[in-house]
Image (cartoon, rainbow, N blue to C red; front, side, top):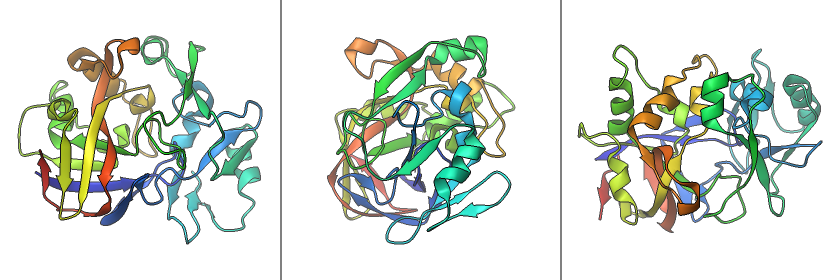
Length: 274
């Protein structure tokens, strides 16, 4: 196995960027999800997990990381960076007052629409929304959903695509940090990695914690990539796992991991599961 692609998302819930290599810190990829928008009306973290309210986030793209400025590209091609009037422009684009921040609020939460209801009623429907805490398995210096690193295999992407002949599945829908080319036809192979260590290249060691439960985000349009309800319906049919007992079986794609040994990862690095 080897690393096929490395992806970083400088601003939570925006589109991110492909990298040839990345520094992996105890808090995850350097620059990954270190920024987020806060809804000024509620104080909650803005997330496309509530698509009725915030799906436009996936029309915005963020790139770059400290010490340089993070650049945000708007749907019309304009680019915001540095001292630009970011909050006012983003509030106008999103249709609600928001603030860009690098500080994770104590007890940070976001709104997560129940994915089964979104599938049944559509992304504009008024469905049940749960208030969800952030970063249960991570250092509170970033805006990750649970753990610092998200892994996904090509075998899983190919299995999802094969379930609906004639379609392909882009990894961007599932927002992984590392896509691992497996060289196997067995889909959802990363389910077997839970509790095991993943060694990448000469330095990095990750410990896989839980399967990644999926929300409505994979079904949404991501920039020019159109919406696709099958991106959630297929794993809901083929791969329901139990990330934590209190949640019960949920559609899962990929796995969350913590960093055991930091270092640098590069595209093409060999990957070994202990």
